[in-house]
Structures are given as C-alpha cells and as structure tokens.
Image (cartoon, rainbow, N blue to C red; front, side, top):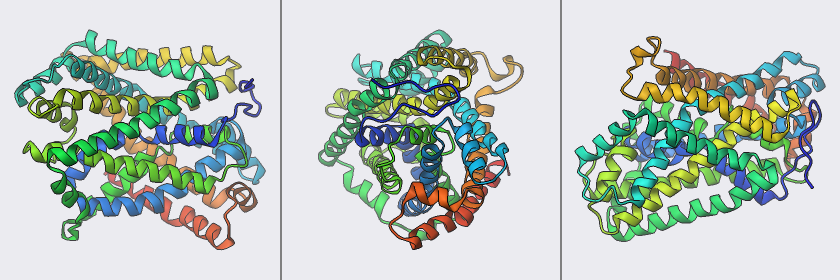
Length: 454
C-alpha cells in the first residue's frame, strides 16, 4: 500500500513504474499550449522557420531546465519550496531560496484560475460536437456560438466546475491510484487520437501544404520577434517553473535516469506539438481559412470548417476529445504540487487538501467567468481580471521563477548534489549541462522576461 506524504517529512509516495511517471510528466507538459497555442503561434510567426528555431530551443533550453527541476525534486524529496530549501542547506546556500519554490506554486495557482475556465470551453465544445452543433455552421455562426458561451456566466461556470471536478477525481486518488492510473489510459488515447486525425487529414486534403508550411523553412522571415516567440513557446510548453516537475521528481525512484527521462518528455512534448500542426493546418488549408487566426483558430474557425467536411461530426468529436484530455492532464500537473505542499504544510490528508485547493480555484475562477461574460471588465473593480492574471502568470511569474531556478541550480547547488542525481555518463556532458544552466538558459529566460514587461 502506498503511504501518503507526511507533514514536514520525506515524500513516501512513489511512481509504481517508470512508464507511469513518463505518462504523467508528458501529460503535464502536453496541454492546450501544444494543441491550441502551438498551431496559432506558428501561424502568427511565419510557419516553418519558427518551427526550426523552436526545435533548437526546446532541446537546448527546455531539456536542461527540466532536468534541473526533476533533480531538485528527487534530491529534496519534498514539495517545491522545501525541496529547494533542503538542497540549499545541503549546498551551504541561504534557505531563503525556498521562496523560488513558493513563486512556482503561486504561478501554478494563478495559471489554474484562468486555465480551468478555458478547459470549460473545451468540454462545452466536446458536448457540442456530440450533439452535432457544428453541422452547417457558418463562420459567423461559429463566432456567435463562442460569444454566446462567454456571455452566459451560468453555463460557462458550470463547464468550469465540471473541468475542476474531473481533475479532482484523479487527484484525490493519489500518485498511484489517481494520477498514474488515469494517465496510463488518457495519454495513449491522446496519441492515438492525434495520429488518427493526422491520417484522416492525409487522405482528406491539405496535408502536402501543411508539410511545406511546417517543414520548409524560409529564414528570410526570421526576425527578433519570431526568435523570441520560439524561445517563449519552447519554455512554456514543457511545463517548467510551475512546481509540477519538482513534485513529480520527488516521487521518482532513484533507479530512473533523469537525463534520459527528460529527453523522452521533451521529445514526446515536441512530437505532440508537431502532430497538432498536422491535425489543425490541413483543415485550415483545405477550407481556405486564415493560418494566423490566433486564439480563435480552435474555438471560432475550426468549428465552422467541421460542418462542411466529410465525416466532420466524427472528426469534431475526436478533435475536442483530445483537447479535453490534454486540458485535464495539464490541470492535474498544475494542481498536484499545490496539494503536495498543503499536505506537507498543514498535515492534511490528500482528500482534504484536494477539496480545499479545488474549492479555492472554483471560487476565484468565478471572477474570470464574470469577466468573460456580459459583465464587462469595468464592472469588476475596474480591472480586466483575465488579462492581468494572464500577464502576471505568463509574463512575470513564469519567467522569473524559471530564471531564479536556473541561477540557483547553476551557481548555488553543490556540484556533488547535481552529479549524484543526474549521473551523466561522462564528465564532459555534465559540464555542458552546467554551462547551459549557468549562462544560456538564464540569458534566454531573461530575454523572455524583458520582452514581456517592455
């Protein structure tokens, strides 16, 4: 029987298998950022040239910091703040570094307030796909469908609560009976759905145009803005600086190789992002839609295209099912470290911690629902809550959390501690990783931060 985390002590929960850990970590990394955000970011930044830069960044910047987070979690064996504090003390550094872990928790919580509402959109559209609401849907009708959802606080909040409820059902079961059991079903389902839709697109049309768009780079289109967008997408899509990977690392057996696991996670995350392009763009090309339609690509443009294509009803169900799976698994990864911290700090059982965190998110998400609805931003204390939460979490908290962690691991963690957990096959590889954490990763994250605030 798996024991629960003891207040103030080591985490006694463990992944039952390496496969379960990898599925959970990939499920956390693979979210709406891959399937929803990646296609429209590619569309807005010139296509294939962006993809090439993104692939470079995700392995050179994303993989090293992912290794660092897993290393901190397994070395510390506690929640993000206390793991960082323990390693700092072990390395002779200030215990105040624990506040980096606190910032990661605040980042995850802030992201979740808005993310739960977006997950509600996805579940609503999945239900609409099942009842054939997209049949004969014109572009104007598709836009109106989305606006009607945002304008109805009761309906939108009900879908948000459903997303939070599904998430809590997984989390209350713990690491093995909840997270690991769920992801072993959900993640293979997501991959098969994406492959199936990509194969469908191959025969339905628009596939060759997509391959050219994604994989024939034109570097004349590369600008500083495009390069920065690629760095930002690579950093955000993997799920670092949100405490999730630290908690997942705390449950990781010491026999598992962190470098190899990190490369598997990053590779799977990248494959899903590219598959998302093969799922979305063929529809866009064969329907003559705008590749740079932004966030409306998924919720306003695609639904109108589904109604006019052969088999559109089934494609719509598969498409929004995979979006739903990605949304729920990412929510699990965002909230698990908060529950881990609550158990550790207050001595709560997992059930109580899950209920408390879920209810607090549900309460705050209600303000976001009102902000989207017919109650304009000016009605709620004169503040556009959603825009400000998104700005704080994505432009301020996330890059700062990643920057501080990179500096901490690169400059303050004892080399013996890092080397013992990472166990690279050669000293030269370790030195390369260390140099990346000391110089390139902080510089890349700092550029993201400065671009966000300037």
